[in-house]
Image 1 (tube, rainbow, N blue to C red):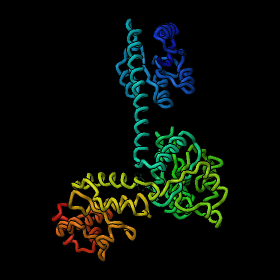
Image 2 (image 1 turned 180 degrees about the vertical axis):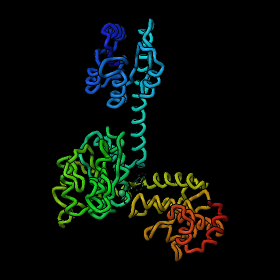
Image 3 (image 1 turned 90 degrees about the horizontal axis):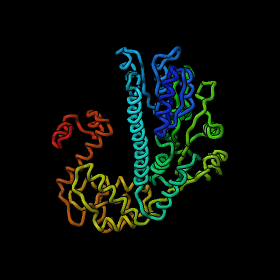
Image 4 (image 1 turned 90 degrees about the vertical axis):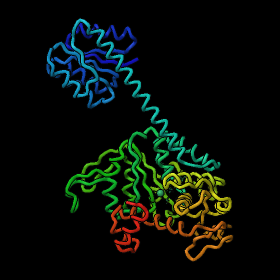
Length: 458
Ligand SMILES: Nc1ncnc2c1ncn2[C@@H]1O[C@H](COP(=O)(O)OP(=O)(O)OP(=O)(O)O)[C@@H](O)[C@H]1O
Ligand SMILES: [Mg+2]
């Protein structure tokens, strides 16, 4: 049942509606002025507000606008005795859920509208709950792996998602640290607010500071307006500070302050602004070693390490490599409309024996490349620097590291596939600018156009 506020300067109407709603089991409060209604709306989350239009000082339209602004999930039913065709249009435009003319059927009409409003608000809540549930399942399902290490990791994610504590995710390059950070956010009560990812290694210090904390107009040349920083933009949500080890010591002091005070100060600004953001940091370095080497502040290290999460390297995940390889095979086969359906047995053996420096990212790239070049339904994978791989020793990589599959190869189609795939990559890298793509491939524009035609690319 719902929580309803009735606002009408005619006390008898308030009473009538109150009794009727209460008889249906709703919780009801009544007020007889717009001012009182606005004050109530500020402090209570009603499902429904029923308001009269014509009232002295603060009118029903004011109540409607106030409610839409401070409590957008509350549905507002507007009632009026005035016969003015402008009012319903104005009310509906301002976001009223329903408009009712006062008349002999007033009570029936209001009860019907309230029943509709309750249905709508239940549907909305259900929808939000379903979406959140699906997103959670999604974010954990995105992490492929059945090994004990990954099972435990997923359990950790579920547990810490419910807290607000700062998390540091560590692990070798390409193990899936960002994927883990996103999953923590998506499983958390913050999931409907933004997840903002910042690569701390990608900016020089002053730029990183203004990116993170924002700046005020005139604080440096080029600062022609006030600009909000990423901490403010992720308000309510999560900020992901990737490659935290790459920050300078003076930047670390500023980050420590944010974690301690939960306030930020924009560059050039005098005012501190409170922020409600969960911080997840990540590193592929040994941060404790950085502390010992004097490159990373010890106090920040301890602040960040409230909850440490370690993402295991791929070589310690047993048969997950097979699951992941098949997952990427399917993904890229669909993306590139290729008919590849399985991995060759030799490739499987080689991949299981490989130690995967570069981890899941390299596995993903390796499969992508293999799928791009494949001409058969069975995928043969050549491993990067595959010193330990049995496959490379079986067929011996050529000068370019290309492996001749045991079953031979359709050379012309193979070369065509390589050409087409390189053209597509160059186009992607040049954001579709063809002259630039031609340059990247060291081709004349004419030859480039010719090849584009040949492979039906546009
Ligand atoms: N368990 C997994 N299941 C599916 N995909 C994964 C998994 N782990 C990683 N990936 C994929 O591998 C790639 C690299 O993952 P991610 O960017 O999260 O790694 P990282 O640890 O942040 O790497 P780096 O240290 O280089 O920044 C991404 O495309 C990601 O989607
Ligand atoms: Mg990363």
